[in-house]
Image (cartoon, rainbow, N blue to C red):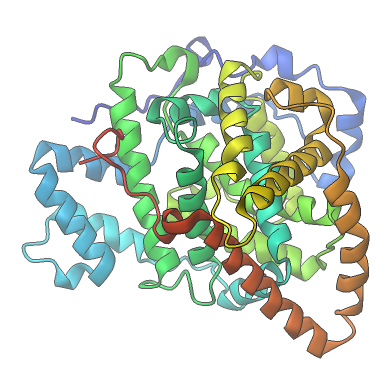
Length: 417
């Protein structure tokens, strides 16, 4: 029997972190004015609200069931068989258990909606964004996500980001790089395998924390729940695209659609249910707003994680002028944080709120010119992609050995087997 109780909560069992239906219906008029633009209301109706609340207490059923079976049999051997299937396929697993076969048959199933040309088009755009892609994901998506304190609890209890932010950022960046290589999400490519590996880690964390007396399910629901996974997935598509626009990089409608499609597939591989996966930015705006309704306000955890992330540049590896380079990177990222989040949210994250957003203000005009010109000059367009990807690879170098692998839980991590 799994330690995870994936119930179907009623209104009475709503986790405290989620706002009540009566509270969220008090939406300002400007939200209703967006309905014709978005194609649906930002604020959910009662049925949609109930689905949101249920998702706070729902995990990844397929992977959670396998992990439950794993611990009911021989955990070490079961993990070895999982790793063998992941790296080399089911046919390479001797005495393959039914639980493993069921899991990987679903993981390897190609969804009917998948368009591999859209995946390639997304990668071309992502590569062309260069280090600005890393900046948006780190300083807008990740740092901004720490304002959602309900989401932070699992991170705090795993000790992943508040104890060694540099290692965790490096591992996540390595996963993103794997996913954004051409062919990276093909069955035996690094992005596919690292995504399924992270999905497995999530299930182990869910099982461990759900049984941890420090975890309050009435307050927070289920660790790494469906709605939190969906919101995280939107950071790589929706927030990414919005952040790049703010930095002067404007995707075409096709590029927007292709980026959202890439992360729809990555989210599907990660165990996000289809009902929480979207095709467009408009759908993503609605879902992200609704996901935030299940979150609690910033608290001490926001500051613990925010401060840890802000200090990460001071641990980086630079070949030339390391002390000066670390200080420059530290203040550069704070300026980007200020640009995207503003002084009030910076204070809520425990960051200095008097920083000027100098770096984005310098970069955005240059990007606007560069990315406008490259659209009418194909050779420049290709060169921009090549240089951008090289910049992304070079960025991984600042993490040293930490940026060489995805998550590998040590003995103190709740996902260690």
